[in-house]
Image (tube, rainbow, N blue to C red; front, top):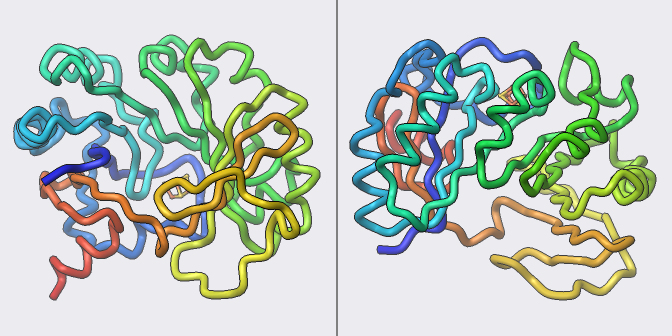
Length: 249
Ligand code: SF4
């Protein structure tokens, strides 16, 4: 069996409140808080799976919280560097709210993806709840690792897509992912009239103002992952909610 990546998932209070947060639809038992726990529950099984299957990437992310709220981020990075096979990349998937304050840790990953739906404060609030817009330009300036921007699309920010991409290009973003909301079956009209340069796992990739822009539809994506849930459960479904559904049946 081959896997594309493995997730280490955190749960606890978040510093944002996105109405579309996928992790909130998981059973509560999976979302057992682990922000203060070192090492995370089930880490030995995760390390064994990553090394046994030579999984190329391990992602620190959250079901219902931001992984940079994890109190032992540095210690966990040290443990993973020590115990994972030498080809394993370690990535951070974050909302970016703490990135500047924790830049020393941020730069210890191999790459990062920031969930960032808008530069406009009102739109940002509508999509991610209270909390200021992270200084994406400042993060890019301070980062010494590749940073990708992940932009969930919904009614509040759909009219801004072109302006959003133009500003991303201006501040030096190299890669953007425009993501359909999980379960959203409405027609997906972005970058219409453009021809994709290629596809990646079934999703079209465009070149826009010197950036690589992927339009990502979770339902169309063909990925395999191992997921270490906050309660220590090791799941093997790409769509987190499917593991939740399987466990709740
Ligand atoms: S930042 Fe992520 S974990 Fe936090 S509420 Fe939003 S989607 Fe959920």
